[in-house]
Length: 237
Image (cartoon, rainbow, N blue to C red):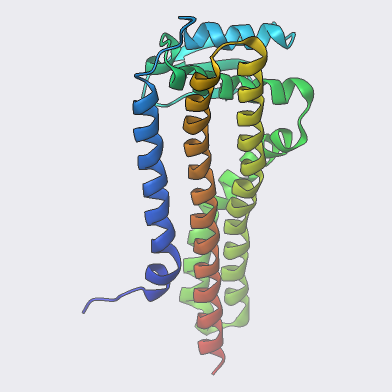
């Protein structure tokens, strides 16, 4: 006998599809503007270095990493890591992505609070995400034997809520990094106005993936809360 989880279908699945659509848009937009090259002919790595120097940052390295769109900033090692398709490319898309990652480096250099907060809650969020589902399952399975087990399930839900907090904090961090990137592109004259417009479209598409991720995690949180609440009510009857 098959079990259909209507809470997942109604609450979560629509936003999972939205997230998939956002990811597909990022890939298609990046691919489109990867074929539009900067008239200045500088690589994304050179653009990233120019923005860092423009802002007086000398202690951040630019490194190449493997993978597709694996670009990120490593605050512990102070390194902007650019993927193979970005590092040596002179495309509008690559320069936009590189400057976005530099935007994160500038956040740490200027003490941007949301970036610091996100980094601080990463360990707690990782622990919470690993413990939440096991605690929920154990709490629901044993809730028949006492109220204390329902409490364990609710603790699991609360721990999963840390993932929501993390995604919520991530939004201003990512949007701010993109604003810094576009501002730096203009200030340093890295791209012409038309080229900068393409970079903005790439970064805007990427930003939507974070919005979609927040929606998915939040709806999953509501689903888990609904499941635990219903289980708790049933065992009180």
